[in-house]
Amino acid sequence: MYARTIPIVPADHTKDGSFEFLTTRKDELIGWARKFSIFPYPFVTACCAMEFMAVSASPYDTDRFGAALPRFSPRQADLLMVVGTVTHKQAPILLKVYEQMCEPKWVMAFGVCATSGGFYQNYAALPGIDRVIPVDVYIPGCPPRPEMVIDGIMQLQEKIATSRHPILTKDF
Image (cartoon, rainbow, N blue to C red; front, side):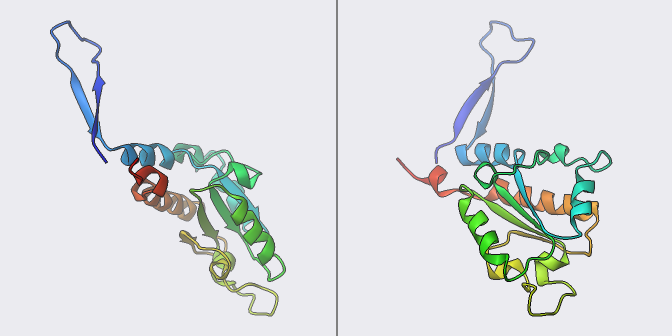
């Protein structure tokens, strides 16, 4: 990838021909823009839903991180937030939702039940959603505090900013 220079015209610009330049790579610029435009799809199944709603409330405000508007269609989302317990019967549905999402896509396991099955050690609960779909960020806790969720979103943003998508890195 070649570095591109973008001229920036200062507010007090005179006609002396002086410019400031910002040099960056295309994949870094797109990664920076993508990390502040996360569109989550909430796959909410259990009691962690209350904490999920609290994260969007005014004291925590996920809008600061560009993850405010949940999408209720997997085709419009790029972050699948699995919130709560997933049973073996729900696992094929979760996989279908994941497969319907467009690339690039990320997955967040929200709470101890989505992460490891939680305290439901029985035949019905899936012991972690990573047995069905790949997980990018795990948020522990029963239920996780909103601060933990915000920390998970920030970890995901770093992962998004540094990830290189195959379409962007292809030489034409």
